[in-house]
Image (cartoon, rainbow, N blue to C red; front, top):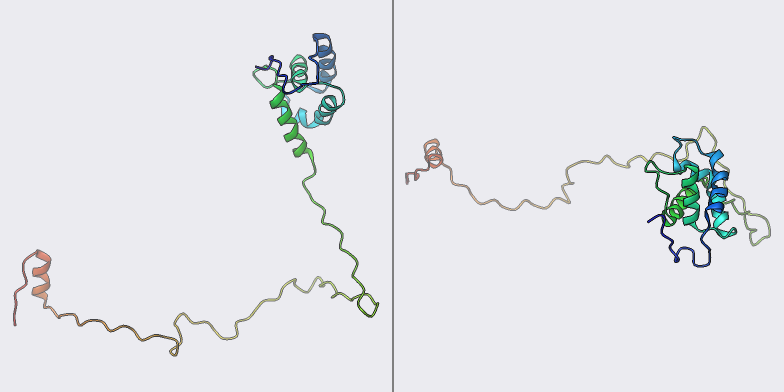
Length: 179
C-alpha cells in the first residue's frame, strides 16, 4: 500500500520520479544511522519535512519513499505511507514542543475611585505558611449529642428460651412447650 499513489492525499502534487526521490534521500542519509529510532529522526527533521510538503510541493507518500531509499524505515524496511508519516510528524512536533507553560503576566492594579492605585496585600514571607491551620471550635465526638439523638425504636420482647430448647432448635427438633 505504501507504493500506491493516493490522489486524495496529494491532489495538486505531482508524483516524484526516481531521480528526485534519490536526490531527497541523499539529503536524509547523513542524519540517519542504522539503529536510530524513526520517531527521534522525525522529531529532528519534522519541520523540514513539513516545509517540503507545504512549500516544496512534495507529497507525504513521496517523502516516505525517499526516506525508505535513505534507510529511514521501521524494522520491516517498508516505506512509511503518506497518512502514517503525516500523523507521525504531527506527533513528533507535539513531543518536541516545550511542555512548560508560562503563566500570563499579572495585570497592573486598576486605580481606585480616588485615582490612587489600589494597594495589594504584601506577599507572604518565607517563614509564614501560605495557609493557616484551622482548629476545631469544640471537639468532635462520634456519638450524637443527647438533644439531637432520636429515641431508639422499641424492640419487641424476645421470648426467653432455655438451653435445652435452643439445642433442640439447632438439632432440628421441635421445641417442647413447658407452659
